Image (cartoon, rainbow over all chains, first blue to last red; front, side, top):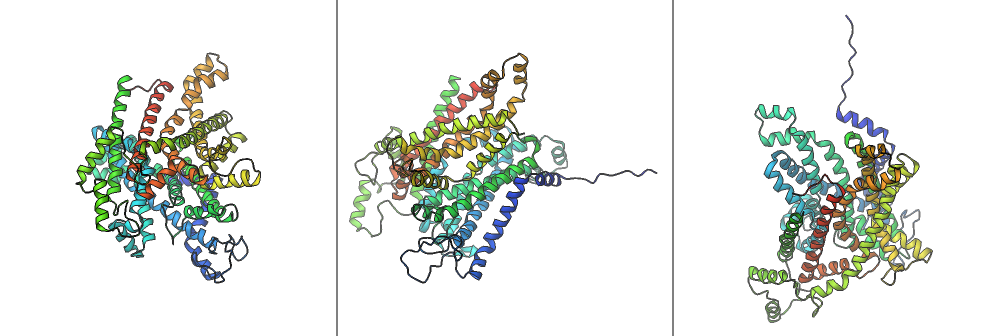
Length: 319
Length: 305
């Protein structure tokens, strides 16, 4: 009897990984981001252990000029209070990345649910839901976020956000509840495009046989949407989420740069840049290091997002 | 077509009122008041202030009175700049932001369309890779990093342009460059993608078959379809341009509307906040309408109900 050569099965994800590996730039971006994530997780503790200072420790000697240029003791120099910039940039990266990732998750939850329901329901429900998205699109949301942050920030943080941040170990900590407020403010304004992307996906999926089969076997509507449709639309969701993170981080940096986002004692790349710009003419490193680190991170995230799109979604690939 | 425009114009009114209501509610729901400062006011003084600004009435009365005035186009006086109406303040500071925004977007269009089209026509050439890498960089460098770098290079280093403040066309160069970078990058990417798709489409093949020369095909046929993604980007871009101008105005110490808005929010200057939010929302909605009308000219397949 003749042996039949069987081709090992290949999944969407294996295929995508193969395509992504061929994209050198996206791979370099992935490596950079991995190093960055490790750095912001263990960096602050490592610096304290080896060099002995934290992002908030000021030097003991009371010299008049505290801004030191980069040296072996302070690789990125110090800020105008003598605090080590490397420690601050690493700590700021922790906050910036956290805001970017968590706000993106919030926007994912809202956008995916909204878009999937609109797409699956279709007809009038879809019409009304997408008109609402159109309407919100034309609101200059940044103005409303600015109002929201400045009026509900600091001592005015709503109780439930303070509670949430308290339950994460930051009870009575205003700086931390401000960061939690940022998660929600940014997440709640960045779900619109996600909803549109998902709706488009669901529209093209919902008339396929597996959905008819699910319906025939008596799966409920929420079951079809969440168990059958959304998992099949995950590719574009992941791509879009990767591209949402840099845009959210940029907005956070804008807000912190304007003094409305992350508040002292915490720092993000945006608020570090805000402090740095005051001394730009004399101590340029105070802006250059956080700024360039942030630019490199956004650059990598954008490249990775582009690479993932080519890998996961070859049809929409723009040649 | 006329009905479509009229209907969309009419929708702007309730939407603007909705945005105003939302902003008003946010301001009012927040604890505190515009007159509460560091020191506690005597009760009599507080009562006088509340009576003067109508804060002693029920909230729905205050809301009704405010809305009645706003519908007539009157946002009242600023709280922090007494004796100046909100409309005057907006009229005074808008020209700075508008000049900045319009010049930046035009520059972005010029750079983006040229680079994107060239990259698409010479796909996979070194120009294509080079310009798209620069575009990616433009997307990733925040304006508050780009701005200072430009200042260090061109003001402190080469002494070509003033580092900050408004005064003459030279002072506009760096702010406009800073603001336009991210849009130029976006437009270049969108144009390249759009053009690549259009150049492969049937109607371009037909045009070639008719014997038209490449220049006519590009300018009269392809560009029209290729820039549709750019046109649809204009809506969100305008909203983002607002945020951009706020930051650029801070970097270069320009007296624009964004700067005034941040100050108004920090001062809790309610009429001024509402006035600026309403004004900018209506502006964006009108621009979005123009964009939608432009679609119809660019792509004859799009029809308005």
